[in-house]
Image (cartoon, rainbow, N blue to C red; front, side):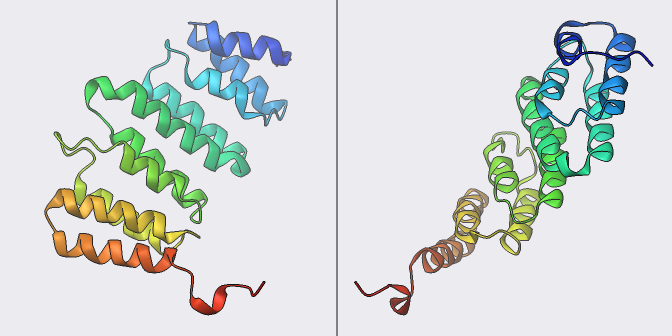
Length: 185
């Protein structure tokens, strides 16, 4: 297998339109144990690749370097959110937000970012699915109040004002320090 310099890999990932050339550089990067996410970001943004090809590279990378899976999945979600929005297709973005949340359940970003990609006019991703996803996150994240605030908004959009109010109250309770928690000066 041909050995590539990091600059050759970056150049290929960002500018090549030949899938075989890109694939060879990717395989070389994996075998050379290049764990810097930056060159792969260039690969994911290569406009000559189809969504399926980007997914192929992303999934393979996450399998080879599990410690990078969260960053890879979150990055893929943001790419599909941006590139597929013209098609009103957020399924791939949502899929990768879910995978990022599974890789690091205590991180709030996948849940919050998934809420940000909701398209109310088209109900994409489906509001009920998004609500269930965020409810799962409440159980795992370190700052659940952030997710309760988003849940309140999602329930509001769904017309469930009672659940919206309940979530707002839970967020407020979590944000308000207990009287015994303050240190004396």
